[in-house]
Image (cartoon, rainbow, N blue to C red):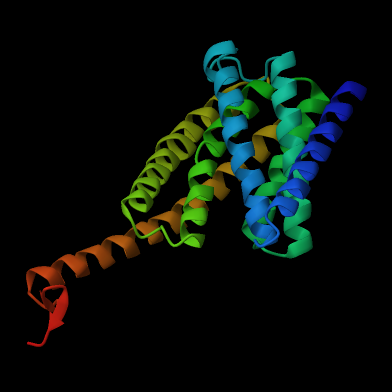
Length: 244
């Protein structure tokens, strides 16, 4: 446990140091800009690490739920736990997030603490980290595109498409498979099962919000297409609008 505490502490300090460096390098930007850079970097690193553990290093989360933690799983969860502690502290200090996101962060932190303390079930929790974090880089990229005025371009459309696709396919679909394996297995703790179900409910709430976003976007596009087809857009001559 001393080794794990040291890893989590070093992770927390490393993310905090990185955030401080970003703030110094981007003095003309907001604090949120620097924090989201840290979030983007964490999302990329942890997605790669947790994906490697879940898909290649093993054990397979759908058949070995509740198995003993491996050293690599401990390293990945310690790295992630340090980040979540940093991010929760930042969100509370700047009061930028709502209750749902704070609840999500708290559940994630408690789940990783329990897993690291018990010494088992890192297999399925690491898989949950993978399906949850894989959409995070796209979410941060979307925010940066908005800040730079590049969101309403083809690049913004591509980012939105892959974000929704991966969220529904992995976080909702893959998450359901992981939760089923976790709940039906006799090995994981009942506390972890309850926490996992609560996390999945949070993901479902996020899915409803994403569904509303997609609906608004599609209605807006349909309205634009209908306007173009009906000829309600201004005509142009040599680049200048002409009156009807």
